[in-house]
Image 1 (cartoon, one colour):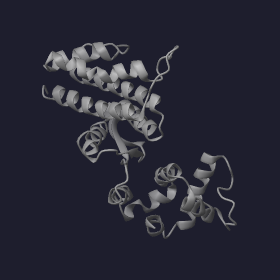
Image 2 (cartoon, helix red, strand yellow):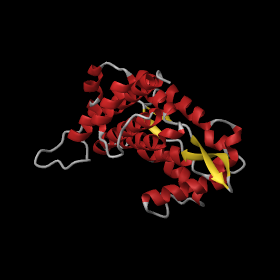
Image 3 (tube, one colour):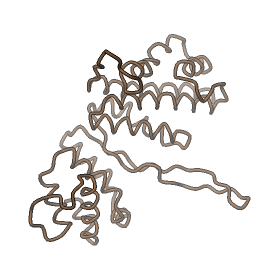
Image 4 (cartoon, rainbow, N blue to C red):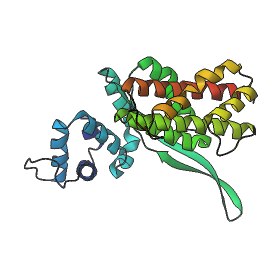
Amino acid sequence: MRCRDLFAYDSISFWSEIQSKLAYLHGRVKLTNARSSNSADDALEFLHDCSDAHFLDFLEYIFHTQAYFHASSRGNLVEDLNEFLKHDDLPYAITDFVWTKQIETRFGSERETTTLTRYPQVIRKDSEAMYQSAIQPTLQLLRHSDFVSANKEFMEALDDYRKADYGDCLTKCGSTFESVLKVICARNNWPYSASDTASPLLKTVVSKSGMEPFFEQPLILVATIRNKLSNSHGAGLTPRDVTEAKAEYAINATASAILLLVKEANKLN
């Protein structure tokens, strides 16, 4: 209904784009067996009966259409959809667009450019309290241009978590943690190597920022979980027990660790 109103002047184009994206996703030209007269009807028929996971795919695809950019001035669809999800107490949220500012040199002069680096993405929101106090502030922090790589890794971790790929989720959490530690060191001119793992990086950040040494042990847990349970290393003879609860903990722990470390390092500036 919201799409009907937003794309009232470009309805056929919008739904045709959606049908095309869903058709590629599912590997078939027609999404349903219904006698739909056009691709727009086919998409709408499919969305009435599809699985929750495929409907969430549709929500993400909305923001990749040309029709959306033509209609985006007529309202904030991210806010609208999040309001719908919150009203029905559904465990999902939609992130916002990420625009990254950079300085480019052309013909001997510098100029600031803004590039779209991330489209809205559906993520799990199992706890409203954790989402408001950890996940959302972390996503806001990682929008800074210094954290482009870390933001990509954390968004991929959230995507893996939603799609129940918990092993890869843990891998991406560990990568995000290491990336943030390297950015903190680079920002403050603290010595580190590009090949450093989380442990030496964390020691540097904790000591240089003036944090109490006992913080190392709980904070390194994000990297330990990645090393012990994720898909980043071979399992050998012992199967890994990577559960949803452990992945949820890793997501929340990674976000909380990032906020703590960045804030403590920023106190020195």
